[in-house]
Length: 80
Image: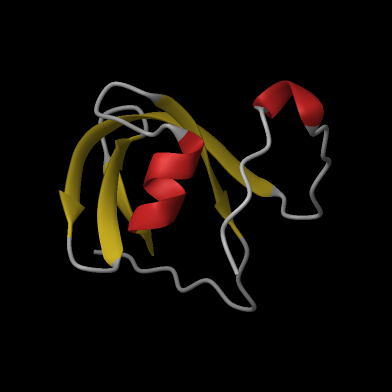
């Protein structure tokens, strides 16, 4: 089954995930199937692992503005 690409204008979606963080892609490390996408979120970086197909279908490149959507059952916090 082939992947489908829908232009961003064609989909309007609201998400239940409350943690939506805007950032800019600073690096993409592609493997055979998955890609590690590093996103700068105001001086700190987070890394998302998504499929190489998703990187291509979404048009993600270094310099792209993206929104990291974090949905988790638990979030750990630490202190010094």
